[in-house]
Length: 308
Image (cartoon, rainbow, N blue to C red; front, side):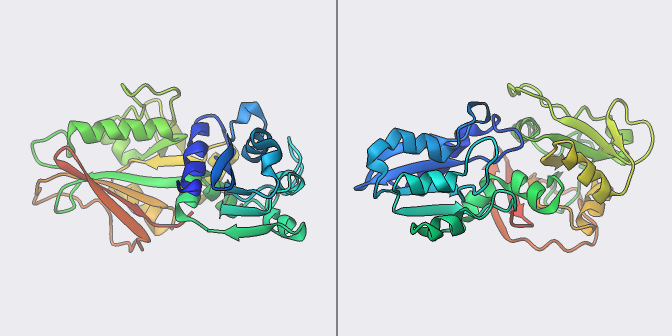
């Protein structure tokens, strides 16, 4: 068994529960056997490490704990997890990613000072699991995903068709909406399409905030008219960690030019439009990593622009 992968899977159980806190999973291993597991669920208060250590009991002494995020070193709603790990007699800690929050960071140094061996993996998977939280903590703004449906020749519309992408792709968009704190477009899209921006027919447990950037009547959407960076910081202060940007080329180019796009999600349809606007203006986007998979007849491309 890959114990860090198990810890990451446990951390996912907290998704939708941790509010503005990070997902964290922990696995205690003694003699090659899992003897304790835990994950963070906000309402339960206890952190993943303390849950796993309690389950392990005396078997924690001399064991290794795999934890997806650096154990905290501060006293918040609970005492420092780093102290709990050291007190349990853990001999080795494997950390998936360091904590970017200066208020909570320092657990690695605290553990090493207590004589505990610590290995930091700095795993891309561990960082991306908390990409929205990490972006808000590090940059003071929401993590922005730019979503666009395009043709093979990069156009955002097909003459004679209402939709560029297929039904399966459109359902995935509703799942994306259900997973984020806010969905946004520009005023051009508001005037052209009067979008609802809600998550429909995917069993959404909550609806995202629905935002229009620009000036004018937004047909019931929340209007944000200030500079983009200022508005994003204001949204972050209101608890918005993740924003799905669904607008057309104008707002997409404005975000890209300002360096405010963290991830690109393209639904590429197998059709050539031959005319019309391209999805992005003349703005370079440095892609850090990328993957692609089929969605019906479309291809879904997800590209990381900024590592969390």
